[in-house]
Image (cartoon, rainbow, N blue to C red; front, top):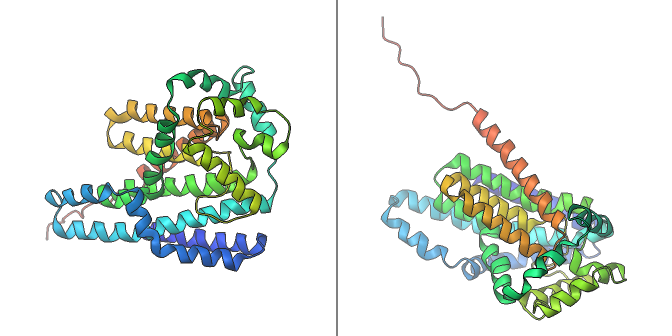
Length: 327
């Protein structure tokens, strides 16, 4: 628990500094973040309601004292996760004030080079006849958001292994803070769906047509894409706002979830691989990301996980003292 609180407080302080330096009305933005915190439990219950009955069923298997401790830690974690997410939103929306979007042409060229001259979105839309846009949005957004935002809460509730939980809280922080802010700033990009709006021209005109023909443009995904662009143009600060393509936090967090499932059971490895593949496909199909965004996120998170795993394995384990017989 202390680890999550330290990460959240440290991130908030750094985020507040960034906003103070680069935004015109930092006090207003920070006050808005604080104002939204009391509603954090409502947000959790709205998007992760299923955790409540599952937690209640644990009373049958977990001792009461331990269950109360888990619930207390989870409740604190809800507020910490929402504070972290709101800070992330604030910092992400500030990135274009630090430097301009510049990396899209490079990322687009890398994508074509990796896929033998084809734009990856073209390859994914060959399957559009078999993909329902509403289901695509449900899988990509609705099923992702609760575990992605509240992974520490789920760890405190359902995982009694503190070493593993701490490892995945660190991975959670790497995905949101390091990939989502630090690395995103180094290669600031808007992604294929916004490419032509940002740079002009017709580079991704075919994608716009494909999104329209597949029904994505008129679906919930299309509405979100319009809202995010409007928020960027107007400079509005909204929960979940901010545009950044490389690397993909979506794919980073689904990779974290997949690694967690694989650690819990080797029988879940095929499912975990399939999970990452589905989200990687949808990230390109829905127009959000270049394929390289997802590839980089997967490799970075695998590297972070491997390093943390080795570090945890190398730590000396506590041993019982050896009894020495009295002389």
